[in-house]
Length: 208
Image (tube, rainbow, N blue to C red; front, top):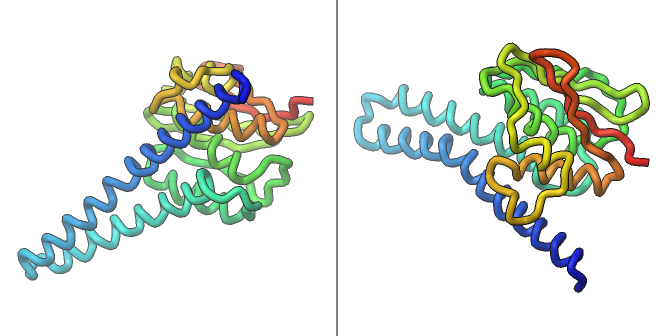
C-alpha cells in the first residue's frame, strides 16, 4: 500500500469514526427524552397524558432524524428524490432554517449527496435563515444559504474545497469533509461563493 493509499484509508476511517459519533449525538436527546417519559409514567400514573405526549414527540423526532441520516450516511443504493426531499424537510422542521427543495427537481446529483450538502450549508446559518436548492446553468447544483446572520465558518473552506489531512478532520469539519469525498467520487467539484452580504452559495459541478 502506497503513501497516498494509506493517507486515503486514514481519512476514510477518521470520517467514519466522527460520523458515527455525530449520529449518536443526534439521537441522544430524543432517546433520553423517551426514557424520561417512561420513568414519569412509571413514577406517577397521574401524569400519563404528559408522559405520553413527551414520548410521542421524542419518538417522532428520533424517527425523523433516523430517516434522514439513513439516506445521508447509509446505503449507496439509488434513493428516490421525493424520499430524500421529504426526509430533509422533516429534519429541518425542528430548526430555525427554512428549506426550499423544488418539486419536481431535475438534477444529475445523487439524493444522498444533496442531503449531505444541506447539512454543510446549514452550518452557515447559526441563527436561522433559508436554504434554497437550485441547478447551475452549466450543470450540477447549488444550495444558497441566506439570512442576516449568514457567515462562513472558518473550518468549512478547507474541509469542503481543500484537501485536509486525516488529523486535521474533527467534529466541526467532518460533515464538509465527508460531503467533499462523496462529491469527488461522483466526479463533482465543491465550491463556495459569497455573491452578496448575507448570502453564501455552496455548489457541486462537474470536474471535467
